[in-house]
Length: 465
Image (cartoon, rainbow, N blue to C red):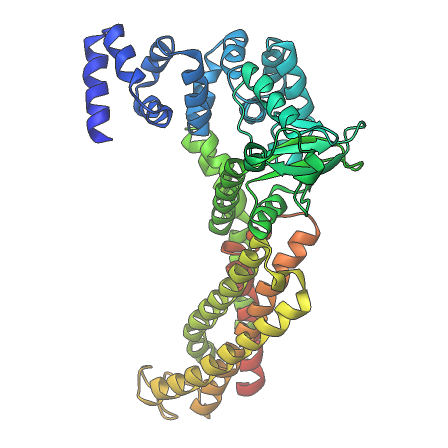
């Protein structure tokens, strides 16, 4: 790629349009998109006018969202329409979804009537549903047709547009989906054989309102290369192919990772540093409030115990909060992953709770025992200055054993409570329609800081004061 960009840089300096046109003519469309992203912004528009419309359309579809938005913002609506008319309706809608409504409506008005109708139909569905990612180009034939009729239908449709045919869909006179026929069966079947004898025994479909993650899971579960999309009456509306699902899987994975990190895809929709900072701030502000809550809890307990004792307790709050947060993140990540992949365990809360809470209990008890021994050893060996009943660093009558027990018990309880939060929050978020991935990362660790502080200092107060 480095050599490719170096050659492109040379051609841009020479300002020879014919050489540039020849350079891009030999490239795959994905390489064209990479070159456009690497070019100076002022050169992109110039290069686009040198490329065939189909190449421009396919390359723009592959650009990073921020680059695509900047590029399309500088083009008149009718020029954008010329680009989009070269794309399938579902890809055109993906580009339109990145524009404001008025701008998108203006672009749609300039599309050819047939494509405009398909685009307007797709725009009524949420972009994260089966209806939002389906393609309206598919081959459907009456169930009474023969193999020869189906092949003739494929040929006729292919004359007008590019069509990838994995299945032929058999419908009745009302458009209700009855069955599917793999394209390979058509090629090897006698010409006059009825399609009903070629249909697969099982029919898998996606409802138009199904979430795209559920659609992805169906592809993995049933091992299909295309899935018909139907409405409540089983009328066929479109088809989702494996390449659509690959994009969904990448999008869902990216979304989950960003949510776990405390940000979202909106950050990458613009080159503005302030915009990116504002997106992250929306996530960090609640975390900042949560950490101050933990500090307020510590201040409250400080006023109710001896200052020397409090100074001994505070250093051990750090590992308790950290271990609790780590355990909570582990469990929440496992649950979010199971929910995203459609794991059977994730569909039943009791089964997941039975497994994960037992793991948290084992980890909590183990960490508690280790912490008890470590604190007893550390304090007894004079790590704290003035250690001992006669020293000045600890209060008179102070019990090292009780301090060690306080830390150990608090460690076990904190891990158990954090594990419970890590288990329940993803399910709760999914129930109320929020992405479960938000329950991991900064949220769970911040919540655990306040919980750990309260638990630890309460136990210490009970045992030492």
